Length: 468
Image 1 (cartoon, rainbow, N blue to C red):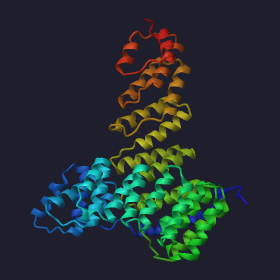
Image 2 (tube, rainbow, N blue to C red):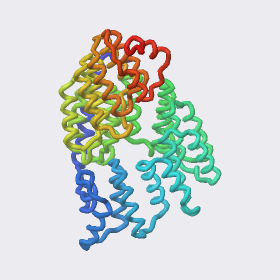
Image 3 (tube, rainbow, N blue to C red):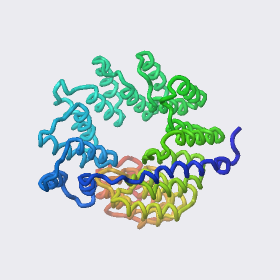
Image 4 (cartoon, rainbow, N blue to C red):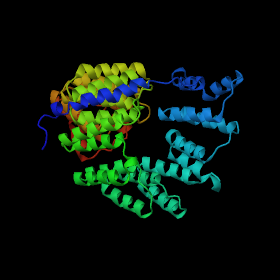
């Protein structure tokens, strides 16, 4: 039966987060080697990776491939992809031997920093001997991350012909692609194909398999996967499985079952290392579960412990907390989270600022919403972020209702700064002029300069605002 008071019923979540976070506190950042500390600081100092490595060597210190690879993996883990790539470029210049895994890693970093075309060129220029399961798998993962279904499936077929589609990793990439494309029904047949080929599903496979059934509103199917996992591959069952199941139950509003999954999660963690390493991704899953369960107390405990114990800032967790606090009406907590995040990282924070903007826009506190939009716009490079069309419409509809031409013009000026001033924005701007009985003699010229195609609706509005 569905819980009537999930917040009270899931009080076990508070106890779990205490247990979950205590282990993390015991695993606070182990001191990184001196070289990594220098390289990780480059984001703040603006120095060069090559200069830093050359300086380190000139000081008489020995740099091993093992140490460089560890630095690359750490930088990659914390999304410092450009610096990680520059280490690999320095290694190539120094003729340090690359194995197949190194080629695959370099391909992935190229995709993240220079785009998919650069990664494809790199792959195509590899010798045939370097086109291995690892490099094919890396390119496949790039296609899947970019939701390029046709290219991903074609490459998968090519891998299959070469007998490279022989691990759970390649199947997991395709499953993830289908989930992102909103095609969860295609995941179970892939698991069946794995079984036919005697490829054992791993923990990730089971988790995404359960998620596919949940997306299809088939909770019984997700539970059958869990039972199979317990029965046939219990060694693949860990705390992430129970975290995944808790989120599935919570989203289905099966709060009693979600509570039991969280308790099993706690038991699973207790049964292994008393101080398990808790990663940012682990915290993110816990955040999502507690938010879905509406466990405010549990979330606050978990969030504060992450803040005090995290060795590296992850903006996704801060964004998640801000959304949660605003959703719960805890404005001061949301604001303090943003202030703390700004102190911990150089950003960008346009996602968090967009969340504040949407909140205040919904409450019709337009001046405050506009201030957050201006701050978000100031952080944007190229086309990283634009306000969603429905928010643009909400802003301009407000100005139209208030007959506030100046406010609408100010808003459109911000939109233009990052290429968001389109025909719809101009239509709403013109409607504001009409509502205020105002004219704008230069409007046609402005629209031509902004390459706006004037359709019949816009022409009708222009007749009132800018008659010829």
